[in-house]
Amino acid sequence: MKSVDVVIVGAGPAGIGMALELNKIGGLNYGVLESDHIGESFRRWPAQTRLITPSFYSNPFGLADLNSVDAAGSPAIFAGTEHLSGAQYADYLKFVADAANLPVICGCKVLQVDPNPDGGFHLVTERGELFTQFLIWACGEYQFPDLKPFPGGQLCQHYAHIEDWSILESGPYVVIGGYESGLDSAINLVKLGHQVRLLVRRPTWDLPDIYDPSQVLSPYTRERLREIESDDRLEIIFDADVVEVTQEGDHSFRVHAADGRHWDVQQAPILGTGFLKGGGARQIKELWLWDDEDRIVLSDVDESIYTPGLFLVGPQVRHDQRIYCFIYKFRQRFARISRQIAQRLQLDIEWIDGSQDGVWGPFGNSECCEGCEC
Ligand SMILES: Cc1cc2nc3c(=O)[nH]c(=O)nc-3n(C[C@H](O)[C@H](O)[C@H](O)COP(=O)(O)OP(=O)(O)OC[C@H]3O[C@@H](n4cnc5c(N)ncnc54)[C@H](O)[C@@H]3O)c2cc1C
Image (cartoon, rainbow, N blue to C red; front, top):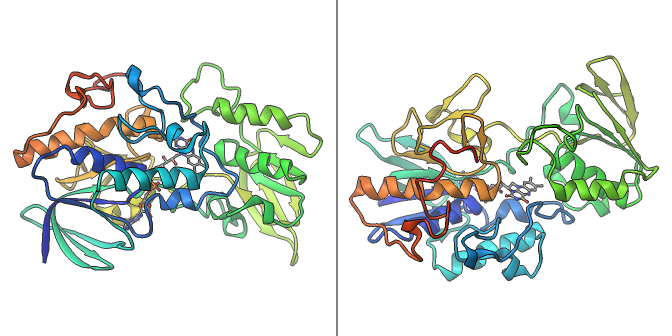
């Protein structure tokens, strides 16, 4: 059986960014296993969806492009645009991986993980078995939508299953969810001429004293909402806590709210209600410690509390009130993990571009975020 030092599972921005960081460790034997293609989740985005965080080449001034996965690159330069489509971002990731000659194996889903009692992990993959000393889980959330956030959720269409808004049948539509994916659904549908009723618990674009884009609507989506706010085709219903969807006859659905209100619609309601907590980390659920809110509890180096040698990177990482669900947030944790692994294997990290001195700010400096409120 092949044996390596480190395996990263998943080749999205978390897996590719982490691999670029591991590339700096001289003598490390590692690989990235990806079930489909590099950037697969982005390739599955609806055709009209764009990254909400803007891309801009600010790297030479110590502030890397918000969407880049290393300190040198810039999706803005790569795609020549500020808000990349999913396909453009996936192409950027592939370009970065190829340029750095990263050892990525596509079409190699990890099916089973068995921790070895003496350390390390035995992996069963679609292409055979292997042993690794350390395992970095980077399976994201997008491919793990919550299809049943309430009874009858399975009757709805989840945002993550929409390939292209322009091929949907004519409305009216009911969209459930008042954050990024709910708003993106409503905006695209209205722009395509459909009548849309958007059901939200609260206006996430107007939450006083909350500034974290993981909790309030991004400026990009606010701007897009502003463009259609006065359009007669859009109706926003507030305080709508949806508790059930039922099917009424063959061609009609009823959406029920907790306060007794209901709305009928002929097309399956659209779910913009999010993803399973823990996302792809649920594939190895028993190897993590989960808290009362069903979130993964990690050590301060993002290692599993239950399973030494198992690390988590990506949007599911949380520490206290800090939510790392954007690329510019979770990339700050890469160096922390690579430093841990290098230390435990007694290997040297080749610091480049002065990153050891924090020239790249939080990017290369694994000590950033120690107690900070970012
Ligand atoms: C509509 C939308 C817009 C967004 N816009 C932004 C934005 O503007 N800016 C931003 O920073 N973030 C944005 N996000 C969030 C961002 O997309 C995610 O945080 C990011 O994709 C997470 O990266 P990841 O690498 O962890 O996961 P993913 O990109 O989902 O990658 C995970 C990879 O793991 C693979 N995989 C899963 N299971 C296995 C397995 N068992 N074996 C092998 N491979 C496996 C998958 O095929 C996939 O390629 C957006 C999200 C959505 C849904």
